[in-house]
Image 1: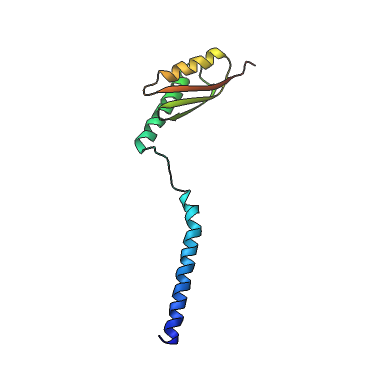
Image 2: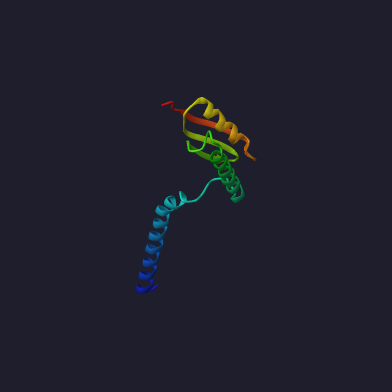
Length: 115
């Protein structure tokens, strides 16, 4: 091997080593961006549909309409959070959500604020 070939080999090895180092440093950063959930597109749409139907039933109901209730659905399980005026309203919100098609369960985390 002549001097130029040795120099090119050393430069190539250094470049490859630097590339491996950079990739090793960047891999953990990019690995967190990967969605590791098991939800399929269909499951996500089903949950979104349930959430929309629960919110619509609240909007149509005179006793619940206008209350500060957040609705979140995960695999058919509805979580209710927010504030209502009475225990009766809280129970009614659970009843309305339970009667929406495809709801498997309702977790009522509503707080009663009887101003």
